[in-house]
Length: 244
Image (cartoon, rainbow, N blue to C red; front, side, top):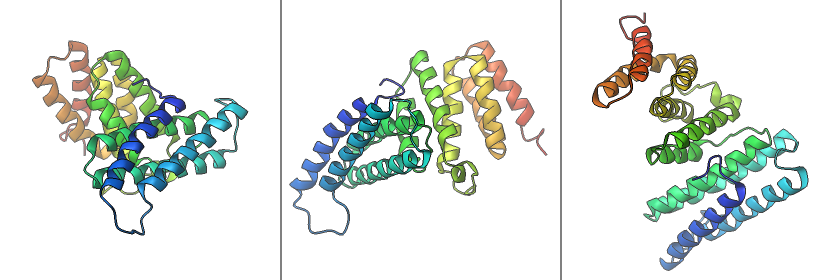
């Protein structure tokens, strides 16, 4: 997968996977429901892509659009894709759910390009985790970390305030943790240092456990010596015996 994803590629991905979800939904002869159905969601998502691509043509791919307009349009698209992903889950189509989430990365990149804010990040965080879990190539991991960084910077202020500290699955936490793991797998000391510094600033309460687990991974896997040294440096700083 090319990162950051192109909007046109995301639209094609959506059209392919939504056809599968709609066909599966229709084959089950569903009863009348008060939920928005997959056919309705599919059509609305395609309209979102049409609007976003038209704005790209009219304003340029990095052209100025009123920030709140970009954020509202993007939020609308992401909410629709979140609902379609839930339908895929309900219909026992895990691969389709993943494809919907990957299509949402194109919408996220569109918001970033036009300097909007991301207000519905759950589906994006899920997709990034899927990409991380299936990626081994160091160059692709670098692109992934850079895209994760852009996503973090574009998250709405109320998400960055991180008020739900009791929720371990909140997007702010999950994205920071996964980004730090990806940075470790890149084996680049500069990237690790930058990401770790931002991690401990964002989630200081998570640092002792994260670096303790990181040291365990250093023992299990054959990480290069410079990577092990950086992990040990942060572990020594943030280990429970040092943090009071």
